[in-house]
Length: 477
Image (cartoon, rainbow, N blue to C red; front, side):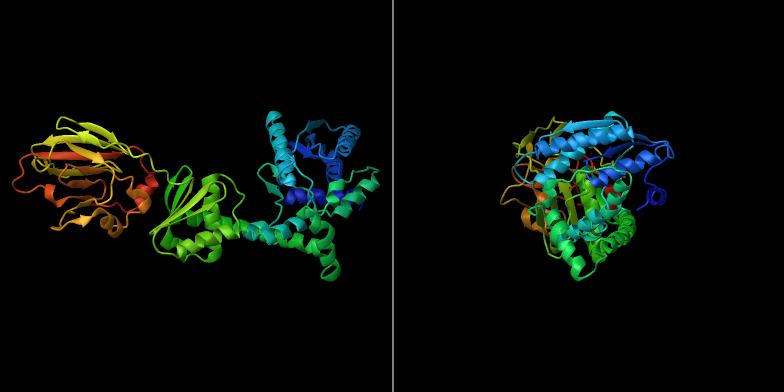
């Protein structure tokens, strides 16, 4: 491949995909292999055209001993010849677990630190067309959906892959034209690594027996999937605003009925979108995780499953909760005794206020999230207590003349079982007279004989988002 032709193609790719801007400060990851050496050379030829500041970064993983050190010296010599400053970092890769994954995380950690320290704009990595084909196939086998089939993105945040428009052979031809050598990593021949097995055995066989242009076709398919992925992500964001009931840090609540109405692919994108928002990570959500959520959506009652990144998904009645960590039940505090002269108390997630009135107020307005009862003060035994539920609890719900177990009441009212242990209960030793936020006991209601009123207001300490207040129906009683 001629150098002028290569530069023209690279510039076209840069401009069409808006990969870099004039005046950008660029870090170039360089391993010493053909791909990264060709990227280093081509950008050295473009730095005047785009007024670029270039800085090469080489990470020596020290895995292959003398061979790794030789790679480092090769990069030093090339950068010196091209007049590109170079930073070298040596890292120690753990010998247990996934070696490739450990090395990748350490490498990207170095890139991120250098980028931040030197206030550079972007990190350039030299993945090319065959790398794209391998990534598409690996993601297909993992069941990662359209996003995975889009493969390596040309630009993702501050990471740029400008060489996807070249094949490996074309980059080697470029280096041969300008008499630049490159290093070959011997570990690339070890087929115990999945990518190597694809590269060395599976893809060559597929090219021989099915399609000699396989890598080019897979690269083209990745571009189409990237466009489809972009459209579906935009649609998912719009649906998220419509279907979301409650948004809190590391926690989102969705409407199950609205979620079920979506097509499977829309539901997949919405759930993946929520997963990313909740754990702030765009990895580790695959088809198997979507299917697990889809399965509990189809069931009745409450269900709970666990996903990577410490994400728990809870389906309770018509809500789907996706959050970091399980719903943690606080250690049950001792019941709190309330005397006649008590005016304030904090119990569980509520701040209570108590006020005696001679006249029942009219049109009393509550702040968002507050709960209030006004009862006949002479129908309550003092002191009374605030506690959480316990087995055998029962009361006489407002408007009824018979007892009902608290468990049956919660089931009938569709109070999620994960919330039942967090609801304060007011008891006077004879009766439960208020299930906070749910129902008053009929035996303490005001009537024509009432002469002294007790107003109790329960104010949530951790109030829910404004969006949730407007969209979720409040339970009344």
